[in-house]
Length: 65
Image 1 (cartoon, rainbow, N blue to C red):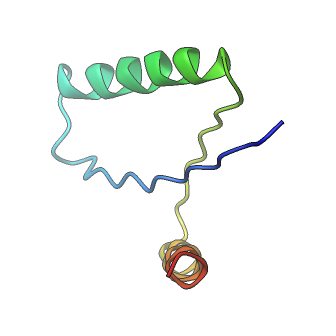
Image 2 (image 1 turned 120 degrees about the vertical axis):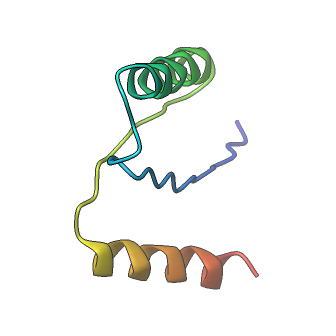
């Protein structure tokens, strides 16, 4: 079986979210996870360490020329 891997970095300014947009984003992410789960796996992680996120982003760019 051949696998494909996708990574997405989603950055959201939580100060701009309100009672409508926050739940919409969460629902859309849940729907995506449900769809992907039919074919593979999907996990979400919340990262609060900005420097770690920057290193991860740099590694992704380095690995995907």
